Image (cartoon, rainbow, N blue to C red; front, side, top):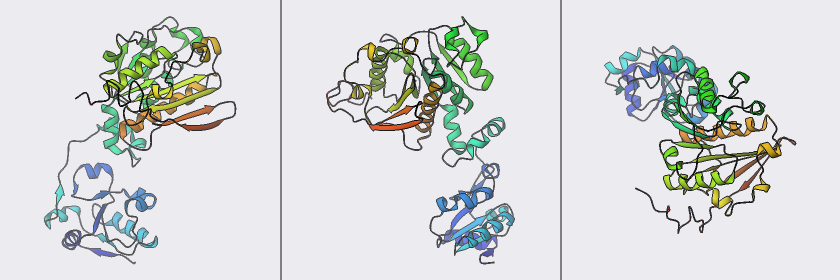
Length: 366
């Protein structure tokens, strides 16, 4: 054995002397109270994540669990992996408090037991955890369109725990929709898409709040519709609506995840106001309609909106969690025929009438 085992009094002294405290218990044990300043690293994750938590193999580490068994095993593993200064506390965790060690008392749980069970695989991800899952549950995402792109986004956003989903669509379910709009079914022909979408979402995750906006987004209602949401998912199919949405989103500082589809080709990017370009930076002037005909005219591969819609959902998760790199400033293009992705940079235009230095929205509205 190439690691030391110490009692609680010695452990408290080592922590005060600079040893990094690592708690190898489970999340529910941590929630019931934990050492101040400790890092939670459950035993099952030690081998995979220790390099991320403690990249310096010579740094002094103090491991503990409930009584010393798990921390001893973890310490042995670390020693085998080349860590040179590992100590395990072999004592009941209650002795830490008795010895005067700083302790965080139990906090109000971030998730209910049912939520912990449902999202268990997701909260295991270091960038999410229970805090990130709480962010998702508290988030409000607006889908402009409950059709081809809105369908996969709605399904996976709700399944993964986004707490409130708004649906903006004034159309009815038609038979020609069913080839790609998986939010709806053959038994709902003639039903409003927002009503059909609510049935599917609530069946998938009853906890998700669905807010229905059975109207078409336009210049007269856009600010009212988007103002109460954290992230906007653009599943529109015409340039007029995209420009209207862009200008209002920049004005209200709302990030927009944009997607578009055409036959075998899809595109996606994210617009974060004043942190990257906006839609008008990408398309300063509106292209003629014949350059981007609707699906009803040009056609679209049924699985294509699934690919693009899921990528849009991925962008939403990153925006809510504040994790990873979004597609802000990058246009990702997918060719389903060749199964290939390409990416081009989009630059913010200083002269953009919406987000440029001379625009009326440039100054902070607050």
